[in-house]
Length: 147
Image 1: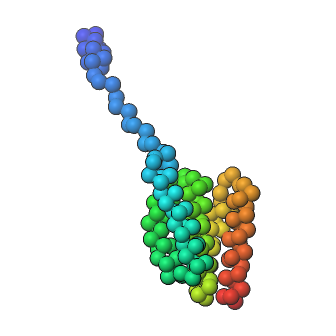
Image 2: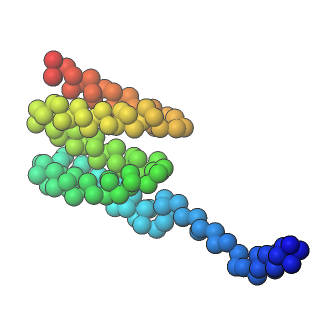
Image 3: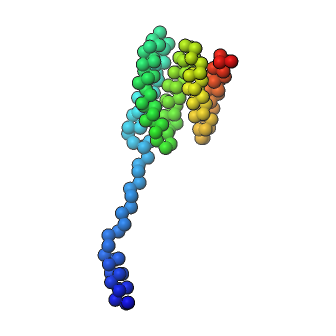
């Protein structure tokens, strides 16, 4: 019995150390994440400029091409505030376009997403509260047209 315990102890001491799984890096600290935020922010500005300068079709094309970026930014467990702002800005612009084209229900869906984003954002700041108020106002405007 002693021999068995001794052999077991020797074999256990010679076995390799257990492999610990590597911790996954936080996606928001990866270079692609900040690059995607910058790209979407630039698209927000470009679409806004196109809309104000009489190019609603160009603005619509930019918004459509920004959708994959939105999905990529929101696919991480905890998106950054700058990512959330860029996503929100593009949704807000798209909602305004839909509202202007009398697509009230679709516009309301986008404004409602923004309202939900900013209502649940923590910590609340003056800017997030301003965005929440803007989203609520847009939802109310859609509701007035729908009724």
